[in-house]
Image (cartoon, rainbow, N blue to C red; front, side, top):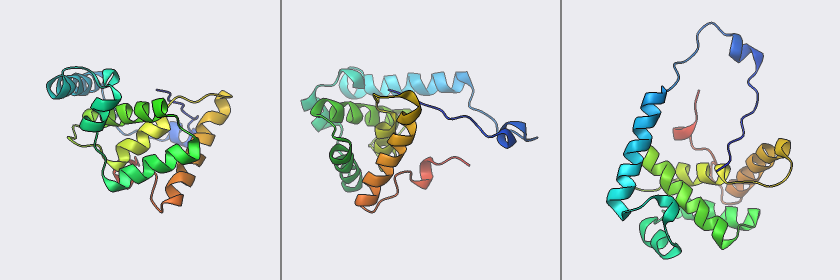
Length: 149
């Protein structure tokens, strides 16, 4: 997984009221709950799922399948990369406490997948490619449920 963060604007950093951040303890509790859910559901972590298990344990709804298909085509994802995206989407859903993989989980997993190339270009290229892939299937790449104000 690769997370690249851009610099925050000065006005954001200097404003008087900062929204409360999630505490380390609450993140740790969500991670523990996600690991427990994985152990109950399949007896191992999502990262250890085989392609056959992915097919059975990670069914996608039509919109999620369309977005993943568009990402495979537009980004030239290999079978291994596609399986990695599915594992990560399953983990995103587990961290959100969801029983199924949602569109927002697939979108986040595609954005978090490892990239090669120059570091400064990765985030910009990834966002552009996801937006184009979603546009090709007439879908919002970052549904409002996942956007933060």
